Image (cartoon, rainbow, N blue to C red):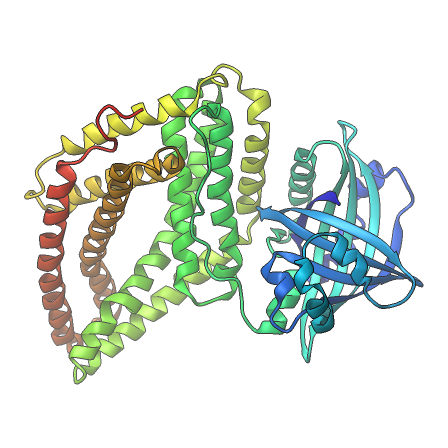
Length: 513
């Protein structure tokens, strides 16, 4: 099998012609452009065995020739698709199951049963305009402009995308070229984090990819610091970009929440490592500024989502006759819809795309641009950092001082320490003490977050009253505030108990290495 590396961008359907006429394509082309009509059939079993093994099997007609392609493994991060790919030419429009057996994807004992169960699942039909380009550093990139549709049963989904495939050279050139395209166009261009196969499966199953939480990051004690930093940043970026489509096309608030988590984690990475990367402060300051912009953008939508979907429903259940609470919830939903639309607009903006592309470039260039700290291992650094931050945490003011500002500051400290502990988790996962420490950080962060959400209710109620000025809402607002005060008492009691346990802990066992 060969390794396929490509970057995908989605574009508006009415801008296909403009993209095809970009002067950049002509100036960098090293071969005449080609136009092809491609028809592909994707196969799987009824229980989607291949998909569940992160594999796809398709046969594609190009002119009068059929080609079978098997893609497996790999990953998709910020529009960059990396897969193992195997192709064979076919004599007829039927999969070569012997070749499928040779890939090793199917257990030999299951081979005959799987082959018997394989059937067409969905098809793609699109026109592809192909340009072979040569970048300044000599890298060869295949630029494909695809437009058509995917069909599963009676359902269709459009294909309007640019596919940049690296034929030889440096993967960073894909990001540089995408950045140049974004800067040359005045219409929305987005990184595409879903390939055609996954879109087809979504149509077939009627489901979408669930919200993506942070995945474990595997690093070893002797891993060079720059390698560890690159892995941690890539993991955070994966979580951020994997949730984009859900925020853009779903009402599930968890996609937005996970995007915010990814942003907070990225901000924590820069806080942790910035003191070691003196020569990179200008770049890091830019990323910190953009992450702050994103967080301010997403915060109102998230706050109104919590108010509408988490705070009010249990109150409505306990006070079914207070109909004005339902009216308040409708007003909150209106605010949520307004801020969600703003988020969706900005996620399709040139500014957001350029931020993602520049961050990818910076991550890929880390090993070339940063020399001074490359010999430092992550083991000694992580232990020292976690102990220093733990000491600062346990020296904070007593929890009895429960002013919102005090608790908010503590929540931020707890959150940063939790993310740092999760980044370095694989180094200390065998220590029971460390596992409990991370669990307790998560509990404390959740408790402090809930208390902060509770404080936010007053601001949201004030916002609703100032816009409506309806006296009939006063009784229901009093009920909400009373409920809020009752819940706050319980929350603070639980927080105190967990905090007292935390004060007795250390991230590491005594005398551990």
